[in-house]
Length: 423
Image (cartoon, rainbow, N blue to C red; front, side, top):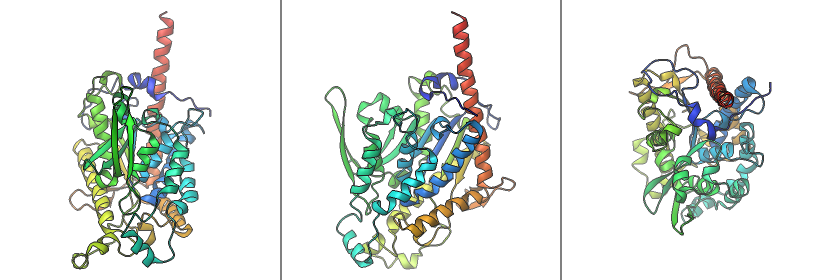
C-alpha cells in the first residue's frame, strides 16, 4: 500500500485544533493527541532502543506502507546522550527531505562504528591509569562521524519537534535544546552535530564540547557541554515540559491549542537502554571503602556516573507514572526498560562484537517481556496483568499512531477541499 505523508510543520495548527477540553480518564479520539517518543542515554547500549524502534517502525510500515518513518508520527522526539544521537538520526532531513535514517539502520550505525568510538584497550591497568589523567576516549572518531553525517543541519531543520538535554559545566545548569526554542532564539539554533557531540560527552569517557552560536545581529553565545544524562538521562519529563512551554507560548493557537495541564491527551513512549538496578550491584559496605579511583572505575564500570544516570532515569519514570496514574491514563504512557543487565552489557562502552550481539539479543528479549510499570512505592517494575508483551503493546501503539496520522491527514485534505470549493 502506498502511503501519503503530511508535512508536520504546515499542518500542526489544523491537526491539533480539537485538543482542548479533555476530561480526565475519558478516551481521546484520533486527531486529538500529542504524541511523544523519548530515548534514554546509555552509550553503546543505544543498540537496545535501536531494536525497539526498528520493531515499532516496521509495525507502522505494515499499516501505512514502506515509506513510514517515526518522525511522521511523533509530535516530539526527545533523546539524551546516545538517545540524542538516535533522535538526530531519525529526524534530520536527508537530501530527499525524508529522515536521514530509517529506524532499521540505527543499529547498523552502532555495529559499524561502535568499535571505533569505544576502542577496547588490551591492558585494563593501562586504561585505568590513562583515565585518571584524561577522558577514556578521545572522541575524535565519534565527532568526525557525527559531523560528516549531520553536516550543517541545524536544530530548526528537524522534521518534527526535537528535544535534547545537555549540561553546561561553565554555567552549572542544564541546557535544553528544542526545536521550539531554536525558532524563536537564534542563539539556541545550534548545529545538530554540536548538540549531539555535547549530549554524548559522558564525564570520564569523552571530552566536554565547546562551541559558539551566532545570530544575525552580531551576538554570540558560548556553550561548554557535557552529557545531558547528568541532568536528565530519561528525557520524558523534559520533553513534556518543553511541549507545555510551547502550549503556553504566544503562538499556541498555531501549535498546541490545548490546556498546558492537559496531560490526558499525551501519548508517550519512553524507551530505556537497560540498567542494573535489579542486580544489587553495590552495597554500602563496599562503597564505604572506596576513594576517588574506585568511584570512577570499578570492575570495568564508572559507579559515580552510573548511579547519577540510573537515579535520573528512574526518578523521571516514577514522576511520569504518578502523573499518568493520577489522570487515569496509565495506558497512554508506555515505558520499555530492562533492569536486569549485568556484566559487559551493563557498561556504556563495551563495543566488542560479542557484547554488541548480546545487546541485540537483550533488545529482542525486551520485546518479548510482559508489559511492566513502575510501582511508585517500591520503585520496582511489576507486570501489568492482561497487558501482553511489549511487542503487543508496541503493535497497539502503532495502530494509535497510524489512526492519529490518518485523522490529521484527512482533516488537512478536507480543509484544503473546503478552501478550494469556496473560491
